[in-house]
Image 1 (cartoon, rainbow, N blue to C red):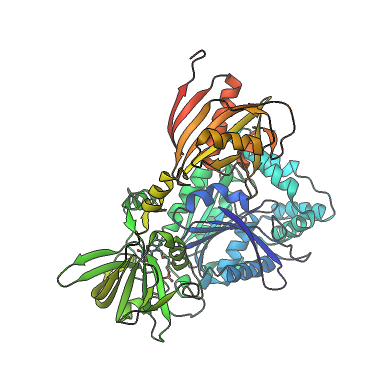
Image 2 (image 1 turned 180 degrees about the vertical axis):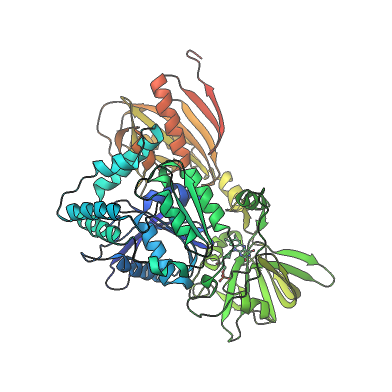
Length: 590
Ligand SMILES: Cc1cc2nc3c(=O)[nH]c(=O)nc-3n(C[C@H](O)[C@H](O)[C@H](O)COP(=O)(O)O)c2cc1C
């Protein structure tokens, strides 16, 4: 996950956002008082299949505020500026609370830019007493009477999970810029009916989801939002107002199902060209088949990665990343690739006289990402030349096949492009692999293994019940860690401890795991520190809110185990991968 900022067109100033993954864009907008990190569980999970962008709302996180007195339509205009600057093209748009108001307003006013819209804990046409109450709260906040305890008590139940989320949300509320908060709250209080009259124009798949115990963003409101559009569904989950944190997995599952719903409307028309995109009616997945599980199962098949290129009728080069390539026949020489019906290049490719398939080399991950993300000019930073049939051939690829179009076959939500190979070439560059939503680079890994470079050592330095944590450079926390060089793990650990400026004894190995997400082996040593201030990081108690700031899920799981074993005084050594493994107890005296 990467946190970054971008300058927007005037008058919107800076945009702060987090992004991860590749594929169709999914844009997430948080609620009043929070920040882009509020979507962390969904960002982590959904970035396996999508290019996920979690935005800081104006006046929150790293985004500049809107002018005081801004109303909901101003936030909708801001979102348009943000998506333009991010160059996303049509997006899947999910908002929470105020974010849901913005997302709903955006879907009404910019239907060509929205593939699907999800409204989580959204408000819609409040009753007169509810409106009076929220307007009174907005007036108090505007007058500087800010009280975070009352909403926190309203948002969370008393269970440990809810309380852990409460303490994280309290931290974010404590960091908010009060003017930005007051402006957003005013727009939130007054915006519940702004787009009600235009609501029926939403033609894309809409998901309205809330907590069964949310007193202000009620299940009745979610039902009304879903019932008011052509393709709405409603889901009510256990919990109250912060279901994306308190029922994180359930929300992720709901969003996954929503993301698999066939697009039905205007977003299939490119916003820029306003051209119609032919959409074959997508067959629905059988009801007993979980679409996400099916997609994951397909994803276990390890493939290479290609960029398929051609030209549109004006001669402008086009291309997209595809792993659905397969050789089909030697005589005649045929290959195939599957193109999604939702592709912006559908028309151009299905009508093209031919295409080229570029088999990417291991060092071309960035090219794969470029051709999987919307962009004005995917070829701008890529060296290429026209092949014998004219389609772009990229420099440095493992192989290329230049084809004339043999046949196109409609197949569900994709079209199969079958090409007859007219010319090809190969190089010795090892090919880039792809499996389970991640790139695979076996040759680079073998090379790194030979040099000990994909082994990482971390130091779990403990003192008086606290652990030394440091900034991970992305606004989160992590353990001191470094790659192990040729000198070995003990030397690397010694260097880590020295760099922290502490007198600490290298202790026993606490955890050994394969971190597939980061593509390395990880060894963590438990070390006891003597007195003295560290040069880097600080000693921190492992409270629930601290844990939520540890961004690497594998380290977070390890620290949660450490916190629980510290309480019991009963340590074990973990062997496994970043998700699962065995804990073997350390028997005293052994
Ligand atoms: C590794 C990888 C493999 C992909 N394979 C395919 C594919 O086989 N077919 C497809 O239609 N999209 C595939 N995609 C998604 C497209 O590259 C992506 O949706 C892209 O934005 C399509 O661009 P377009 O709409 O401009 O054609 C893949 C993406 C990645 C990262």
